[in-house]
Image 1 (tube, each protein chain N blue to C red):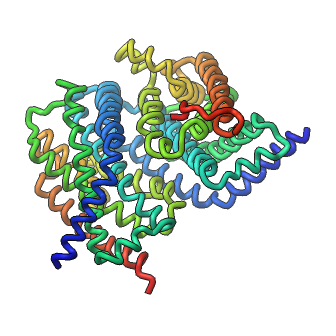
Image 2 (cartoon, rainbow over the protein chains, first blue to last red; image 1 turned 135 degrees about the vertical axis):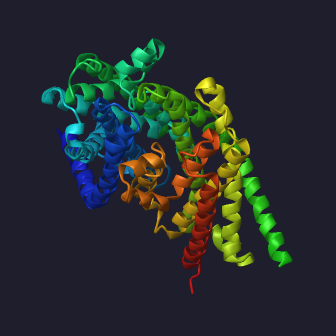
Image 3 (spheres, rainbow over the protein chains, first blue to last red; image 1 turned 90 degrees about the horizontal axis):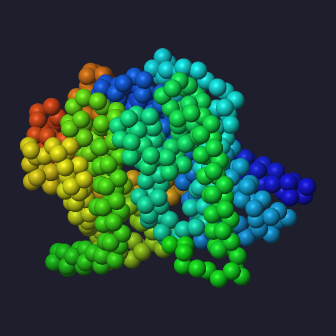
Amino acid sequence: MNSFRVFLNLVQRDLKVLKKRALSIFFDNVVLLFANVILFGYLLPAMGMSKNLIGPLFVGYVVMAFFEIGFSLSFKIVDDIKFNRFIDYQLTLPISTKGLLAQYTANFAIEAGLITLPLLTCGILLLGDKFVIVQTNWLAFSCMYMLSLILFGLLFLFCSFYYRYKWFFHNIWPRRLEPLFLFGAVFVTWKKLYAFSHILGVAYLFNPMTYATEGIRATLIGGNDFLPVLPCMIGVTFFIVVTWFLLVSAVQKKLDLVVPQKKSCS
Amino acid sequence: MSRSFFLFLRFFQRDFFVYKKQLRRFFVNFSFLRPLFYSFSFAYIQANIIFISQQTKFVTILLAGNMVLILMVISFTLAAPLLFDFEEERFIDYQISILRPHLVILERILFSSLFCFVVMLPFFPMAKLILRTSFDTTHTSWSLVFLISYLGSLCCCAFHYLIVCAMKGSEYLPSLWMRIEIPLLILGGYIAPLHTILKLWPTFGYIVFLNPYLYVAEGFRSAILGTSEYLSISACAAGLIGFSILFTLLTFYFFRKKTDHI
C-alpha cells in the first residue's frame, strides 16, 4: 500500500514537471503537426501517392512521435545515471525497483498520451476528408494505444539502462532506433508490403513496431487493409513481456553495485 | 598574419587528430548503416509501394532528400560539442585567447565541412550497390554531385554553427529539432521536389527559396538525373554559397556575443 502511495506521488511529481514544460511541448508539437499535415495531406498526394494511404501514413507519423518523446525520456535518464544520480534517491524510497520502473513507464505513457492524442485528433481534423476512416473501434483503439505506449516506454527505458552514456548518444539512432522504425511498417502498410515482397512481409513481423503501428491503424481506421487487431495485441503484449525481462536484467546490471558489471552494456 | 595562418593550420591539425579517433564510428553510422537503411527503406520499399508509377525517378528523388537528412545530422553532430563547451569546459576561451575569434569559428566551419564531405562521399556509391538498376545514374555527373556535396556540407555546417552560437542552452535541443530542423527538412525538398511545391502553392511556394536545404536536395536531383525539372546546378551552387556566407557572418556575430564578456 505504501509502495502504491509512493508510486502515485512520483507520478504526481512528474505531472507537475510536465505542466511546467507544457507550453513549450505544445508549441514544438504544433509546428511539427503542421509540417506533417502538409507532407502527408498535400505533398505526398501531389507526387502520386494514393489518397487511401494518407490516414495510415499519418498514423505512422504519430508512432514516430512516440520515438521522439521516448528519446527525450531516455536522454533524461541516461544523463541522470551519468551525472545527477537522482535515481539513487528514488531507489531509497519505499518502493521496489520494479515498482519504480513501472512508474517510469507510466510517466512515459501519460506524457506521450497527453502529447500525441491531441496531435492525432488535430491531424485528423486538419486532414478532413483526406483522412478516410472506415470504422473506429474505440475500445480496441484505447487498449491498443495503451499497449503501444507501454511498449515504447519499456523499450526506451531498456535503452537508457542497457547502453553506456557515450554509446547511447553516438549510436542509438543509427544502430537501434532507425532500423526499428524504418523496418517496422511505420511508413508503409504491412499488407501492401507483403503484396510487394512476401519475404520482407514476414521479416517485418519480427519487429514490434509493425504490431504497434498496424494495431493502431486497424483500430482507428478500420477496414481490411491492415493486420487484424487481435494478432497485433498479442504481438505487442509478447514484446512488452520480453522487454520487461530485459529491462529488469539491464537495471540490475547497471544499478546494483554488488552484481559485477559485465561488458555486455556495449 | 603568418602567425595567425600557422595557428589556424595547427587548429585544423588538432581537430583532425580529435576526429580521427571517431572516424570509424562516423563511417559505420553515416557511410554504411544510414545509406544501407535509407536506400532500402525509403528508396526501394517506399518508392515501390507508395509511388506506383515512375519508381526509378522516385528512387532518386527520395535518395537525394535522404542525403539532406544525413548532411543535416552529421553537421549537427560536429557543431554540437561547441554548445556543450560553452556550458561546461569553455575550451573555446583558450582558443580565442591565441587566435582571433572569427578565425577560430571559420576554422571550425571549414574543418567540419571537409569532414562532413568525406564522411558522406560513400553514400551514393553505396546506394548504387544496393539499388543497382533501380537507381538511375545514366545521366549523372559525378563531379557535380561532389560539388553539391561539398557546398551542401559547407552550408549545413555554417548553419549549425550559427544555431549553436545563437542558442541559449542545450536544454533547447529537442525544440530545435521539432521547431526548426524537421519543418525545414520537410518543406525543403526532403521528399517533394520544388516543382511539386510550386505546383501546389504557386505564390506561397516561393517562400521555400529561403530554405537552405532546398538547394542541397534540388542540386543532388539535378546532378543525378540531369533534367531541367529541378533547380539548375548553378542556381543551387549560388544559393549554397550565398547562404554559407550569410550564416558564417551571422555566426561571427553571435559567437562574439557569446564569448566577448566586455
